[in-house]
Each structure stands twice: as C-alpha cells, then as structure tokens.
Length: 314
Image 1 (cartoon, one colour):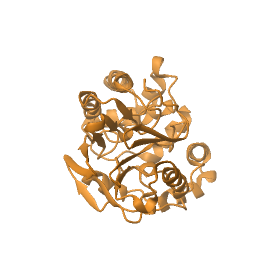
Image 2 (cartoon, helix red, strand yellow; image 1 turned 120 degrees about the vertical axis):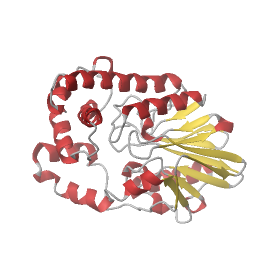
Image 3 (cartoon, one colour; image 1 turned 60 degrees about the vertical axis):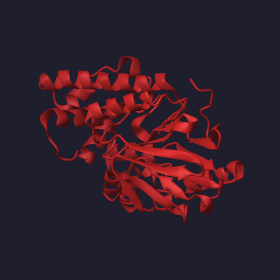
C-alpha cells in the first residue's frame, strides 16, 4: 500500500502530481488531484461546496504555487456534486467531462440539494439521515460551472510535456465515469470507480462495466492510484473493490431469483469481510440497481425511497 497518510491535505505523489485527500472518505468527502508541468496545470475534480474548494485551492497555491486563476483545465470524473460543485472558482479553466456526465450534471443542481436539506428536519428518519451524511456541506455556497468540452470514449490533453489520457469507463458508478491517466508518471485518478475502505455505491451499473473498469486500472500498471474516496491505494485495493462487486452481484442475484424484494434482500445480505467498510447501508442502492439490471428495467431509480431504505438500514 502506498505510504501516504490518510489525513486532510495535499500530497505530492510524483513529479508535479498531487493528491488532495479528505477523510473520512464517506458521503461527500471526496478526493481531488492536481497535475502540473511547465507552468500549466490540470485539476482533477473539485469538491462538494465552494468553501471546501476554496480551502483546497488555497492549499494548492501555498504548497504547489498553483492558484485558482492559474488552473487551465478541470476534468470532472463524473457528475456527482462532490466532484464538481467548485468548478466555477477556477475562472479561466476549461471544464472537460464525458458527454454522459455533462448530461447528468443538470439533473440535480445544487439549489435542488439546498432545498431538500432545508426541508430535511421535517422528513422524519430519512431527513435525519440526510442531515447526518450531508449536514456538513453548504449547498447554498457553490460555484457551479458546467463542462465546456465533452467527449465519449477516450480523449487526451497536454499539461506542459505531460500527456493526460481521459478514459471513459461508465456507465458504472454513474452514467459517465472517467479515469484520468498520466502514463509517464504511472498515476491514475479514478474518481468514484474506487471507494477505498468505504462501500461503493452503484447508481447506474451495469456491474460488469464497473468490474471491467477495475481491470482497466490494473492493466494500466500504475504505481499510484488516487481513488475518489479514501486513501491512496494500489492494485490490491482495486481488487478488493472488485471482490465487493462480485460479492454483491452474487448475493443479490440469489435473492432476486428467490423472489425477495429489494428491501428484504438488503436486510438479508450479510456483508462479512466488507462489514467494516463505511456507509454499508449503500447496499440498498446496489441491490436496487442490480435488480433493475436483472429485470431489464431501464427506468431511473426511486432515489427518495432508496434514501429512506438506507436510513432504515443505518
């Protein structure tokens, strides 16, 4: 396992490459990355609100000499707000995302999240759960900026003399997940294809795509792997995420075939070796997504009901 402490802050992982880590890696506490070379810079993801992103950018300015106005490119690995709600603080940056992520970003803008949180106290156990997991973030203070450049498949950008390859591996966690690969420095920023020491949450699927995305990371033979949540990891950490995905697919399939409901299956599955991972209640979303996959159901998930079930499981 790479020797980087899982403590809040910026860590140089290579020649001009940095990981910005946010413990505890649970809901909303995402990581980001910075790639610099020859006076140019690329930011991999921003954070869940503007305040957190400002703090990160100030730390990057002090430690790496790269201020918000110096960043030329932002790559959003996917559409979830904890990876893009600070984009607008980098006023001069081109924002790149996959076409699927760009479309998904418009589905739940920050004002909608702010409205939900304002009503949370009146929503019973589900509202208390939302306050528990999202109460630390200020969705009234964001800096949204939508992608100015989109792509499908693969796309490469230059940062000084460094080639940065963007590899679309979604739909998996979300509709348009992207890996950011710096081959010359044997580094991959994975977005939420990897949750390390935390439970993966599969909003989109299919599960085979996510398993294949893990294989893709391993095949790149990186020395440093920066996950979307959790500590910096290595190939063994990637395989553990795969193990969870295989496990949950197998367990959900057995219960689907036996006719159990999503709720009953989520309560029935025993997590065993994965029970120590944070946010284990996300099994509710994973079972729901897998059930819809097994049934060939392409309708969107009932997010409100799923947060209610996660609250119940928690």
